[in-house]
Image (cartoon, rainbow over all chains, first blue to last red):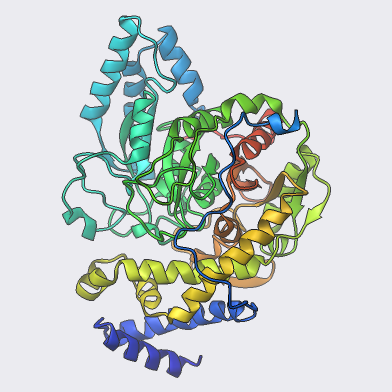
Length: 74
Length: 465
């Protein structure tokens, strides 16, 4: 994403979202957006299967059965 | 040098035994705040009348011979995104000050009150938690108690600084991408970011619902653990509170390192750690008998996903106010909020879709390891206002770079204890070490923390203010 492309994108999207921006703010926002784009590119390298979908509420692992901590090694 | 104040366990024991009253402990805390917080700027509001009433009630219970709860008389304070009945929940902002006062306390404030804690007030933070420095334009920056011209870290900067300054021994903060771990590292205090979903977030002002965690700071491992145990409790009214039972960790602390398999994170985590940060990791590894280097899967991708999800959800949450009152936002973060609100949805969706793959790869690590170690921040606290930092020859924007080592971990949802350590070559400033465990195994991270503390390599140090 070039600087010009970022500014053009910010202008269009801010208009779509009815988010008024001054010219100076548009440049600053475009600069942040260009950095976000660089970071988002990292995700482009991930190969997703079509079955990989969103979860409404993320859970890192099922909550374990209630038993005293540490007894699994006993 | 001001000695570190007693920890929550010691204070509760003194009060229970009658060696001092809860009112005396409260007065000591208030005196310390009154005499030194003008330099630190950790507190944004004090709840003195409420605190005095609670301390008096604890003292009356003791006089009547009633059994006291575990934190009876222990002063604590909370990041100002936690609801406190009767106060508007600022979340570090100017805009929220127009909101009506909270009608009730946040769930976790209630948990600590039920355990006998005495709420002293609300603490400084980055506006809407979007930052790692607590350079808050509305309330003024929070200063690092160890060197006042340096940042305290953020976004829970007031929560870490209040413990480091000896104002209180226990505080609460929130952590979306590192906002407990970064200030704990930079202020040299113990911090715990629990498993995602362990503690209820009900009654806190959100930042990124997909990623927000809440947790405690303290001046010792025992105090941290006692506070954490008091915070636990299922909350069916918080859809993200996945824990269905309490798992006390305090009884586990005495077990030490027995049977723990400890590894050191390399690659990404080494590349983004300065020599001083690498040195504290090495010392922690030697102390915990960790010899093997471990590769955390897809760390850079995990950080990228956390970054774009944060930007999108944060920007979307505040879209109405960004339209109407952008000039009332924090100047340091308002443009990032807007950029996030404008992001293509495809970035956000890729980040969220990646999260399940990432979880499975990360959780697989813990079949072979109980604890993994990395630095919590790439460097020690920079001077307030710093724009750029250098890490191993590469220049980074200072504010986002403080979360380089924390974001990949919280994106997986793993629990982390930050241990305060003190490398050479940082002019006496601390850098914390992350002790990372599998989801729901806070007890293991706290045991490793206890081992570091017992060995004398990690501790909170007193400050002169």
